[in-house]
Length: 185
Image (cartoon, rainbow, N blue to C red; front, side, top):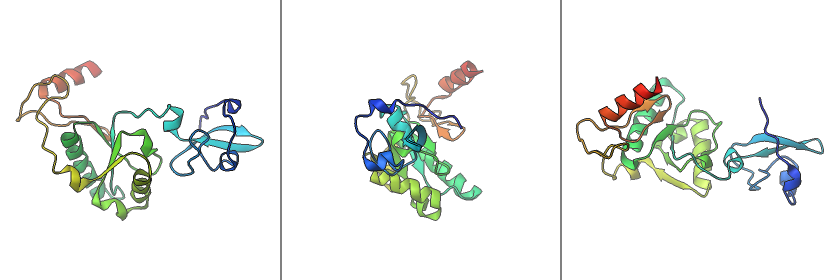
């Protein structure tokens, strides 16, 4: 695993938890996914990926739900499409615990989040963080999006979110989708 080196001399004064490798060296929070960044007096120091990025989020909504079985993952992925469509933002399905939920614009938490340890942990982190965390039932009151997020054209028949790996795009029309796929090849 590659480790990021940070100049700990730039960090004015580390708290005891930071110096013991328990808390993030940037924000001093002890919760959430962290990566090793440096050593100080033989102790590994850690930092949240979002803190390393200066708190900048990636413009994507995290979708947190049970992914512990193929059926559960399929249901969570289907909900991810609804999230992308109704919130008009790309949505990523978080599988496993190796995610820093604060690196996302917000999180939508499905009712199934308590069915697995990983999704339960991520949901707790999202609710405890200073970020938007919505229940899935809340976003279902938002209208479906029929406007292409790329060209701005409205088309009730052809505009829908598209899935690329573990992420759903915002709603996109067939013409823009074809153009995007051709450009990627």
